[in-house]
Image (cartoon, rainbow, N blue to C red):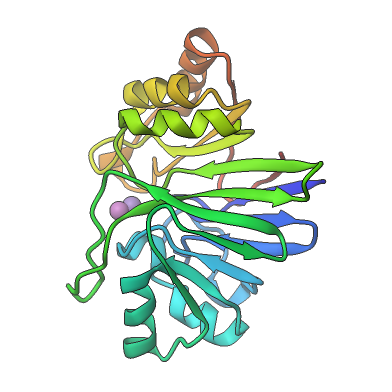
Length: 232
Ligand code: NI
Ligand code: MN
């Protein structure tokens, strides 16, 4: 199956799998890296990794306009309903799986926080493993969300990860050095960096990072530009 992956800068992604547009961590209008505005986006699914504004600032507007389901943790699902009238939510928690037309998604652990924009409790931060496609042709995509590197990531390597998306910005998440450790734990076929260069405190040299990935891991680094779409 052909899978398109588009980056909007920071940690916002659109996965296009068999015609299903899956929007991950919508942050457009206040995202200095994004070449598009939230109003231009119409997904079939929205996934939210945690409650921080730089991962869900535009979620409610896009969800209400697109009438698409929102997969997120239970606390964020409740908050979206109570505060923004978003009714089509699927509240999950760490370890839980859900079926969708594109395949399966599982919410997995992240080591991070998840406070909501108005200060409310936002549950636990997470990541997602997407098993895209059917039984004979599955592409496993691991989006770590915001996280530090942690040893329990390693168990995800057992299922075989084709593409890993991970942060390299440091300060709020793992930085470039720790990301190499995370890649060594997961051993994905290819790895895409994010959550860097959005603002000066998380500035990184992605080409330098890519050289380290090539010399210290067996994974192929794919460095993208904001707005770019690739096939994975
Ligand atoms: Ni965060
Ligand atoms: Mn973040």
